[in-house]
Length: 186
Length: 453
Image (tube, rainbow over the protein chains, first blue to last red):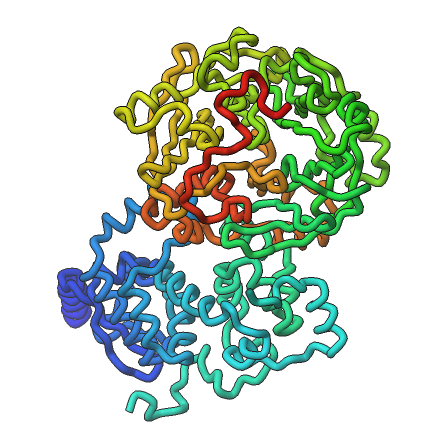
């Protein structure tokens, strides 16, 4: 009885301490720990926001088994940079004034952020962003990947995306005829 | 160090071992990426592998793509046998080769359901952009007159009558020029389309819809000669506005017509009556230039347009290298206000609405209920064909416009603006880059009356 009560109090204290902290600790699939601003995490990731609100953040490192350390490092890096470099209000107001604009072009720093990544790191990051519900990071990474497709021949795209060509010669010829204009570069 | 333990690769990772056709990205993320591509690129990646191909033909993908790419498209007669649908970067996103009698010479109107095409025999055809099938409209007075004439100028307007929901096609033709007469007002005729004409030609039995198309009716003549370059009428709130031949800005050319200089004639689609009550902004433009511009400087420098339900006069200002947009704020008192000044790098020598080009807007005519989404869901077309075409018809990202007009990035991000801008600064050889001021020899300042005779 006594012990139970003590345990409960300790739990209570820990929760309070956790609520007071302004960072959360995330743990990658390979066990590495990363600190990220709680405010930025909650604002940029719907999944982390839900976990923070629901109190399921583990002080000793919230397990994110689906995300490798390199991708998680990039996620945390992005959150911290985002918190520093852009006032969120400006971001929101500009997206509201033209809310029919389907996609907001990446900022200069966002472009640089994804440009330095290797293909593998980029593909890992886009999956991490998707898993964590980070809409903007998902947009920026998808945009980068789409850039990698633009102006490329089907062969080049197959190589980058590791795709086996299982069209027959006839099928390919048919597609090229049907969509001829798409294959003639100006 | 970070990859010290290879067994700790995440559940979604380990792609090095994957050689399946699906490649490195899960389908949902691949979809996200493909949605960002311009339409031409989407067509190209169909040759990558069958799974990418079926993904990009998938109705859900198509619907999402259309929603993401609301930008306007242009329908252009290319050569004489094909009609290209272009996005704002100038890329072809769909090529149609309609079986039109004679040659296709001009796209009069375009929306997702149908294009109106004028042939070189002056007949008008309705083209279904999905199937490429063509139906021909009834022959009117113009075709009869034109049978003995190789070339004649004509003006069109196509819009909705708010009170009845009908659509009307207005055609004006200069019969003096055609028949060598003198003093005849330009002939004006109207064709009414009743409900259901959108499905015309897409049904098993086109005749069922043909019955709903009336014959051409001759209506009140246009009050004066219209401008030959600014070819077609601009519809704002059920009224079609036209530019006068601009030699008529100044007296005395319009004496005979009892209208004021700089007047903008308008045709009410409902009452089918002409009005000459509206004065254009020409006098304001001259006034505000502080003596730099006179009326003659405005010849070939003005165009009409519709923007956010306002009638807009576009003044291509050579002095400032700008396109100035004058909005009609108050019809009764003819109050015009210069709302936008757009810096443009290349001032076209002659402002023409290229006679082969029409804007393909997401909103057919002015019916807000019939937007692109409706076109996807209304079940008019067989599913597979519909998806195929709608994907082709979706436009490139609006950000392309930033290339058109960098200095007005925010303005050009507005889709309504984009629409108007693209129709005025089209990708056309007619707008050849030159800064020479145009004083067209076709407008001799001393000639009296209509100068083309």
